[in-house]
Image 1 (cartoon, rainbow, N blue to C red):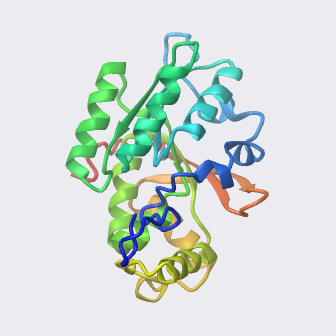
Image 2 (cartoon, rainbow, N blue to C red):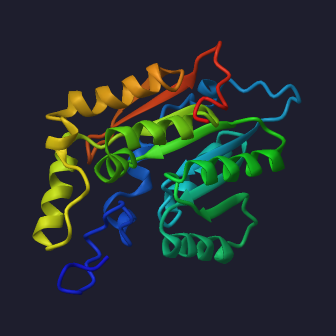
Length: 258
């Protein structure tokens, strides 16, 4: 991204698309809080006796976390296929380069996608699921994404995003950024002389962590038919909560965002 003076500013990632993201937020820091019994939380029942999961990673950046997640699930005895999407085409290309350099075959599909384009997102996710003969993803990952949606698209945009993603997953692992990250993101844009976000904490009416986390939780529960299953706790370095949500037993809302 460029600042107002035309200079490239890699730190001014308006959508969280930092080119060096995993240099300061390594995948292993998140995995530290993952429970040993992650597989049991998925409650797999495909009826075919195979330990196979289909996963969605939203906001995958350059793919490091996606590949780490796949490795973790495979070490737990699962066969894991991933669709990993990101708004930034250059980051997706970096992710594809990593898979091309791997000595073993991978079942991760990296794809550029603007998830705020609801119709395109539903078509993309459904096409992938059709190819896997699945109705929904077993598990979706939304790690440090919600703030960027919130600052760029407001409260209603956050609602639309969570409704779209949750309608295509049975479980959703969410890592919302705390309030201090909102303030830091706004200050960073001003310091680098970049255009302001479309929204800020004042216009969003968020004043602390309770407002941020409470809003995400309320949207998922009240509008997305999902309930919190377990909290993994806070990541050690960034102090961000990671919570696993599950679809309500009586919910079958693939079309709840139509």
